[in-house]
Length: 256
Ligand code: PEP
Image 1 (cartoon, rainbow, N blue to C red):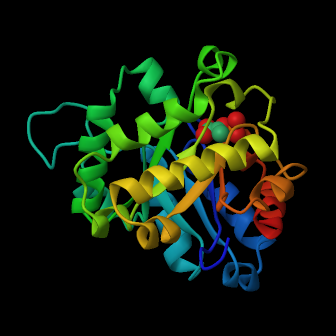
Image 2: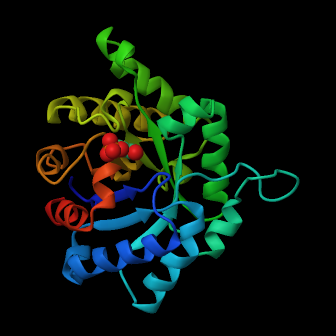
């Protein structure tokens, strides 16, 4: 991965209340010695309602672990009932905001335009957007996955300048691999992550693209993470199910 420090991000999805969140973060911290953070960035992405509780543990115990949010509003403030602004997340010490997760794209109808607006909102408030892309099974079976992901990256980051693109993380998450136990092969992950980097180079320039972290996500666990993250263009993992188990998540982070 050259100069790119791997990132392991644990997406808790709609799991764990704030008390359970405290318990999990404490267990992760206990299982992750400080020296791990020299070679890998580790972050947890809890539900919004857990963020304050996670913050108190991270700050109080001076943990090197960071945290983020699973979504961010495209709006700063105003009459947008139910929305959470990037300003609020930054104020709570969030480092990352996941944008365009396939569950948001599919279940909440988020378009590439919405994802772009949310990416801009995250950047505006100093959050690192983790911009998710990924093809469904039909696209994969038609053999169109490379072109599909390139188009999704280009549309989700359209109009950003090189300095902005440099601040983004992209996560390649094939929809057929998320929560299914069906992980992409290491070479499949490498193929698409390399193509994503190519798209970033077209949007910005090669040096910028070479500095951006491109993650793989989809049924990553402690057994398969080593081979996947060992690929040249795969700079870490976005982890769902396995991020809810403290020992496995710590193990994952140690391997990456
Ligand atoms: C995810 O939610 O981004 C994800 C990759 O989930 P899982 O690891 O459970 O497939």
